Image 1 (cartoon, rainbow, N blue to C red):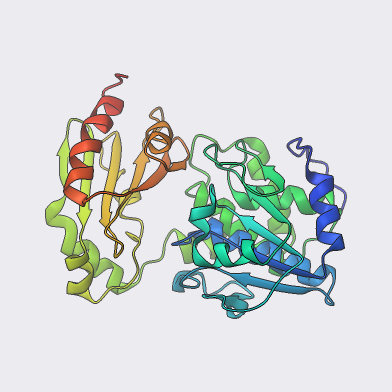
Image 2: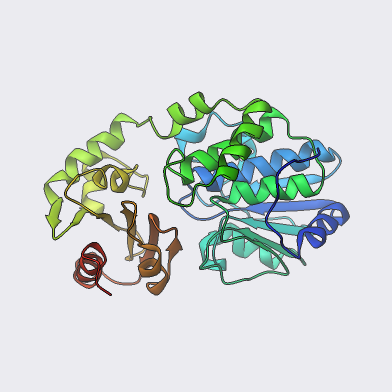
Length: 332
């Protein structure tokens, strides 16, 4: 495949291609509580490598498996939720900023793979692994995969294009985030020409919600507070239990709250089974929550970022809300 686009320069493109070519067995993993970009990256790269050489063993894994709203992607039935056996010549971590984010499957994979490729787009990436394809200017990990496949001159079939476009669409919130540039749309066009439907992907991801997720929203709406440009909500384990939910995500609640006119930033605090607190932040154009996420041990983008803290939810809320107010009011 010959590209008319200019990929981001990275010294490890050749090293990554050589490692992939030399490996007879490859494990691909992504981060905990996966989103559209995580699964799009996992399946986009996995499907591409399977079509490149059917004789290679390509295994895909993510803790807890694939979220149901992404079940339309080709290859979801091959994604393993746990790893208890096996060894690989190469492991590729996609869309994970650090080793802990890859969970139990990542830990097992690293212990049973001599070479690790770290493929990501988060500025907070810790540069773990042996070969780095970390491009902070990319809007999604699937953009990095697109450039990797382009550098290898591989044709992109529809079963690869669809998950790659899914990552672009979900991580840019439908091409609306401030890091969306003309090249983002050029890549989207290329993927559409390869068989990916922008309309279908948008409908299945950004315009889709299960009724149980809506019940969770109803459960936590009484916790919503708007203070000095910051709108927040709290999701406790008791809320999940009340509606019979097992999905630890907020199903896009933070993005929904960010639409409130009087709010500059939105945050959802989520209590986890591990006794930690996960935060999901969104910001309107002109405001930046990525720096705060990074300072809290997380990461993300200016308008969409998050972190997980080892503290009770009320303590985290008391710590973070004043910092977000400073961001919303334009003070350091």
